[in-house]
Image (cartoon, rainbow, N blue to C red; front, side, top):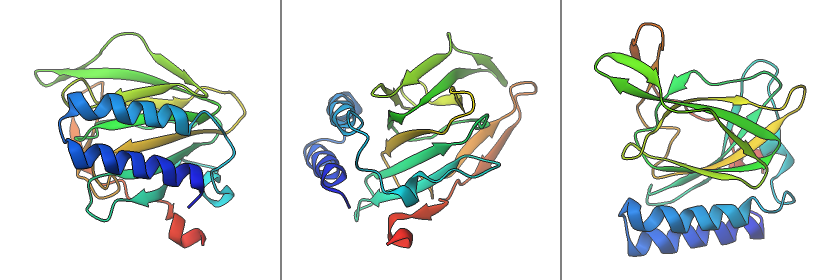
Length: 187
């Protein structure tokens, strides 16, 4: 693990040792994430490899107590997620390129767009949480280039039961995302 990533992990560990309350921890994790993505010189090349067909989700760190995970999302040109939720808090920092997120909310059995699309550029940070909104669709916002975002979630996100949504019908399907690889696989 690089020194910059290790510093981030230590800060999140310290924050979670003192509070599990989102109102207290999210601003602190957001600040730490902003510092992490301020420099693009620390992510191992193996954790930044795009796939030709779909985005990649690489596990960079999993807290031994399962309190949080740190993941790199690698977006090839034109790639996007389905509309999905997280069921846990998350802090997303844009490391390289840009991504576009369209938020949604449930109204009865329907899914409706929730505000304007948000564009994250390198250095920008966003928060998601069931308490403030965590249903969205994310896409690479840079035509013809790879974009990379770093995510810190309040659980082992690769094992969390989450949901994908069909915006046209409101249909919901459970899924577990898993990981493309882990930092240990690359070592």
